[in-house]
Image 1: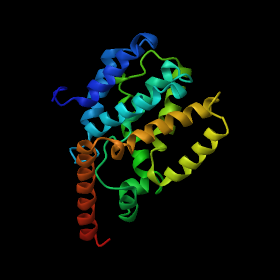
Image 2 (image 1 turned 90 degrees about the vertical axis):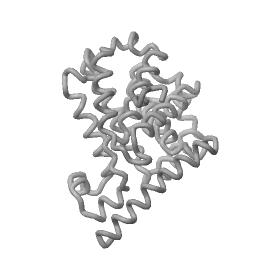
Image 3 (image 1 turned 120 degrees about the vertical axis):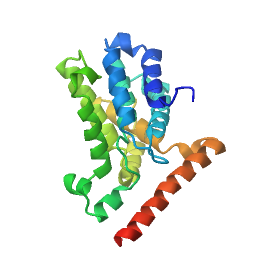
Length: 235
C-alpha cells in the first residue's frame, strides 16, 4: 500500500539512493525507473512468484550483502548488479516449476534444452528490456562495467536454480572453511553475491510466522494449480 502497488520499483530506487549508487556510478535515474516499471509489469499476477516476491528478494539480498564479511569485498558496481539481479530473477514466472516445463515438453524447455529453464527465461526476458535505449539501466557505463555487471547478474540468476542448491551449499561451505572468502578473487566475490541472492530467495521460513505462513500458503496455491494442470495434461 505504501508504494501504491509499485513495491519493486520503490525498493530498488530506495537502495540506489541509500547506497549512493546513483552518484557513485553516474546512473541515469530516468532510464533506470523506466526499466523498473517495465520489469515490474512483466511479473505475472500469481500467488507467489509475483513482483512483491521480487521486491522481498531485493530486500533480503541487500540485507545479506551489507553484512561486513561480504560488503568489504564489494564495489558499487557489485551492489548495483546484485540489486538488479534480485529484481530480475523471476521475471515472467508463470507459476510452474522447471520440472513441469520439462515434462510438458513446452516451448521454454525446448528453447533452453531442459537446463535451468526458468532461470534462463527470467534472465533473457528481463535483459531484453535493457536493450531499449530509453530503459537502459546501464546507460553511460563503459564496456568493462557493462560486461562485469552482466556476468554478475547472469551468474547470480542462474545460481538461483533449486536443483543446484546442495551443490552450491557444499562448495560454499568448503570455500568458507578454507578461508577463500577472506581475500576472494573475482570468482569468489561473484560466489558470495550468488549466495546472497539465493539465500534471500529461500528465506521465507526464517521470517516471523505471519510472513512465513502467508508466503507458504501462496507457494502451495501455485503447487496445487500446477497439480491440476498436470492432471489435465496426463502428467
